Image (tube, rainbow, N blue to C red; front, side, top):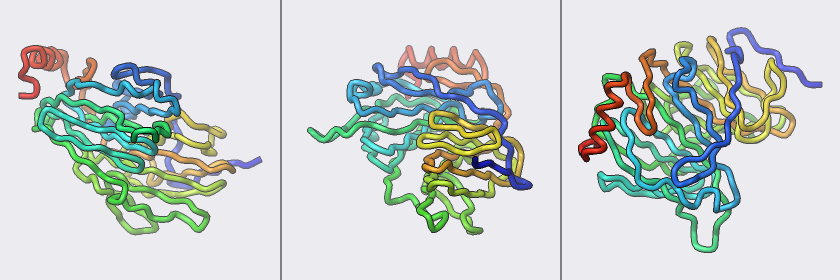
Length: 292
């Protein structure tokens, strides 16, 4: 039986959190892991996974709705979503691509499936909510597409393991490399790791950053045994992240970022630092000035 031996300096696994079946938007079925009040999640707030071959689970999408105080990062493995917002931005992201949105002081947007006619092959993707520092929550909103071809995807070994760099800075084989998104809040960094069976990787990461790993395929071997898909792993202090796949391999999202250490008050699509700011966001939305 395989065992996992953590190397000196590697971050310990502190706890795992299983995704919970939920629904959002106009009834889109998702698996959600939320950590709004968990300091070890910061600067990340929530991760949603859409994974279904039944279009009835996602076809209604996410009609127009507001946000304030956060950034979102949507990343697609399969399928296609189209973004539209009150600023006039629009664009579709398909397999391997991502979309980043800074809500700042306020944005109203929609995210709708854009599957080709007669070519529906299902949907598999993720959306991250990333908190913004109090000093930046009222910044101007903005948005951008990141297509698959823009993302570096260096090999990790000779057995087929690789890492797709989506956001932030990573060190691969001793070389610093950036994903195409470098302006995310709190130095939030996101990468998609695909590990071959029994393959391992040791990634140097800033010791002051929080580190989270979401397993979307296969399983990882850890000091707490084998942990399979649908689980988010939170790691403690250390200089690097050591991961090892089980015999059939694994696909994981790896996240790291600088904790904000600020109060978090969450209500629906708004994330601020006080109840008074939430109430102001609601007033602004109801009187039409949130996205003014």
